[in-house]
Length: 204
Picture 1 (cartoon, rainbow, N blue to C red):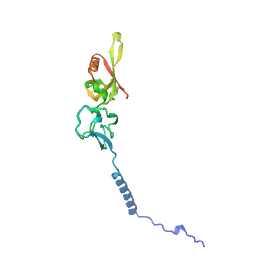
Picture 2: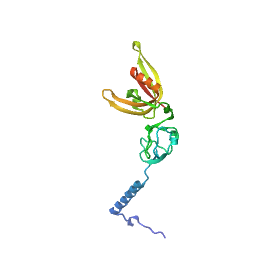
Picture 3: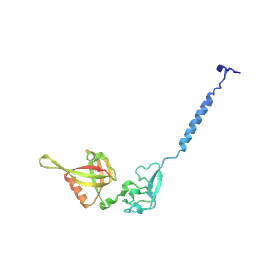
Picture 4: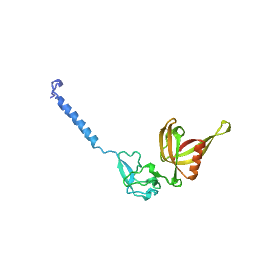
C-alpha cells in the first residue's frame, strides 16, 4: 500500500546564525593552525667547520653544511662539488658561511694580483657584472684621419669584485677588481691611459 507524503508538510530544521558563525570560525582556526605549523623551507649552505686558512682547496678543508631560510649571497649546496678545487682568498672563522666573493677558481692562482678598473656602465655590460664572472676587454684607439681601431687586449679575465657607484658628473660607474699577473696588469694599465675600454661578459 503506497503512502503519499506531501513535501510541504515536512519540517526541515535550519541552523541558527550562531551555529553558522561557529562553524566558520572553526574552519578559519583550522586553516591558521595548518599554516603556522607547516615546515619552513630551508636551503643548505656551506660554512666553515673550523677556522680555515686561505689558499687551500675546499676539498682539503673542514667544510660543514647548515640550513637557512635565506641563502642570499651565500654558497648553497650540501658539498663543495664543482668548487672542490677552488680556494679561499682570505681566512674564514669557524661557523662563517662561504661567500662567492671569497672563492678563487684554480685558474686564478696564476693571476694572484688585483687591478682596479672603473668604467662607465654603458661600456661594461650595463653594470651586469658580478664577482666570479669572466670578461673580455676591448680597447679602442683613435687613428690618424679620424678613424679608430678596436683590439681585443685581454680574454677571460676573472672578476674578483664588482660594484656600481654614482660618480659626480659622469653618471653611474662600474668598479671592478680583476685578477691579473704582471703582464696583464701592464697591458690593461697602458690601455686605460690611451684608449677607451669596452667589457664583454663571457659565458661559461
